[in-house]
Each structure stands twice: as structure tokens, then as C-alpha cells.
Image (cartoon, rainbow, N blue to C red; front, side):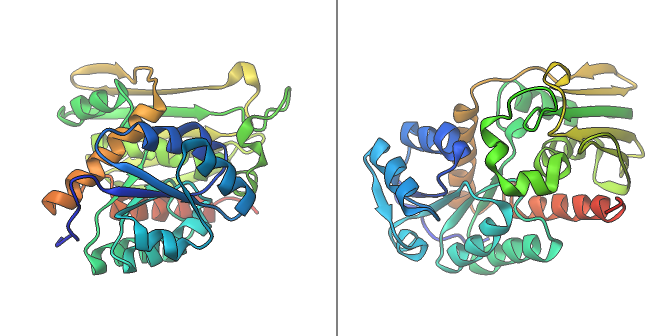
Amino acid sequence: MDSPRLPARPRVGLLGTGPWAHRTHAPALAAHAGSDFAGVWGRRPEAAAELADAYGVKVYEDPDALFADCDVVAFALPPDVQAPLAVRAAAAGRHLLLDKPVATTVEDARAVADAAARHGVASVVFLTLRFAEPAAGWVAEQAARSGWFTASAHWLGAVFPPDGAPSAYAASPWRKDKGGLWDVGPHALSVLIPVLGDVTSVIAARGPSDVVQLALRHASGAASTAVLSLGAPAAAAGVGLELRGAEGVFSLPDWTDVPGAYGRALDALVTAARTGVADPRDAEFAARLTQILAEAEAQLPA
């Protein structure tokens, strides 16, 4: 990968103005020691102006103008809005700090990965468990082990709880439409795949609410399961992942400081751009996640 050169302090522009941008992307970009937060574009100009004003950065009326002024583009957009804009940013020679899922169709995810490769730009996808500590270090430790037998994961969010107020993310139409499979499925797969190997088969089934249950086989021969939802009762919500194998039983630790994790994702992108060595959490990996999730979705009743 022959990446466009980065200046000593790359300029980072943010696309998106929703709760995730307010809580994670913008504060992390403002706090990042090695780059400059350059500006914001959003589909709602008034929201973009409000977020830009909060951080004293420029508001852009057009994403291409932001691309022209920046070295890195950070995305906090719905996946199927993100994908075509990421292709445009790559064509402009801008490195890509993407959100998950990159897209909800194989074609669109493939287009992002291909554009990054074609234009020689680096890409990193913000998969929280791969950057938040101590979870990220734990994943690396488990990936170095062998002899895995099975694993079980659950990510049960209460974004749309049946017994209480919805979360700040409930106003997201794509989450309401796609549910836990697409919103939190990438998180579970982002841990299972580096430890157990690529998915060789997937079986999907519906549960209550938006629950999707996945039964997976991996290249290592291990089997895993994942239970995914955004509609869990508040008292039932939680995240967990357990690995079992010849060396014992290992459980995913808790993690905190999501803005700090986002800063580490930007560090990883800068490293990939400067070294020309693709990060393992790049757009190509994200395209594979989309392929697996699309295969699962196709098995579910309409």
C-alpha cells in the first residue's frame, strides 16, 4: 500500500453529528495529541454548526470541501450513508477512520475496501473491543493461544427496551431497521475471528424482539455462538464473551474510556498511513464482517 504522505500533525475532519459523534468522535479528536481536529460536516447543517462551535472548529457545508482541507476523514454516519462518502474520500486521497458496520450490503462494503486499495489510502474501522483496554490486550493474548474448542458471546443492548425509556441511540432509523445483528454483531465477530479464525459457516435464527442467534464454525475447527440484540430488557442487558479450549476458560474483561479507544484507533490509522502496512482492522476486514452478517441475515424470516 503506497499511502499519501501525512504531515507531522494530520488534519482530521469529522462527518456526522449524532449522539455517537458528540459522545465519542468529537471529544476524542479534540483530545488527540498527534493531530488537529479540523472541522465537521453533517447532513443537518444546524447540528453540524452546533458541534463545530462546541469545539471551535470549522463547519463545512459540503463533504468534498472537508476532504480538500483534511488528511484523514472520520465517519460517524449510518452505514449506508458512510459507504459512498468513504469511496469519495478515498478517491480524494484521504485516509479513512470508519465506523462499524462499514455498510449493510456486501456490494457497498466491497466498494469501500476496493476504493481504499485502489487509491492507496489507509483505513481503520473503530471496533470498540479491538481498541478499548483491557479488552484489546486480552484479545491479542487469546489470539496467541491455540487449542480452542468453543466460544460463546452475547451483546444484549437496551437501546429499544420493552420495559423502559429508549437510549440516546434509539432515534437512529438504521438501528431500528437492522437491529442487533448489524449494530453489535460486528463487535462479537471482531473478537471471535482473530482468536478462532475466519468464519467457515454460519447458521442464524430469530429469537424474541430483535434477538438473532448465530452458530458459527471457524477455520481453526472451533465452534462459537453469539446472541445479539438491541431490544433487551434493561435488567437483562450486558456484554460477555467466554472462550474455552485446551489451555482453559477465558472471559472478556470489562472495558472503559471509549473516547480513549477512539484515539487509539486514530493512532493505528496514522501508523498504517505512515508505514504503508495495512492494519488488521481495516476496510478489508470490515467487508468480510459485512459478508458474514449478510449471509446470516439472508437466513432470517422477513
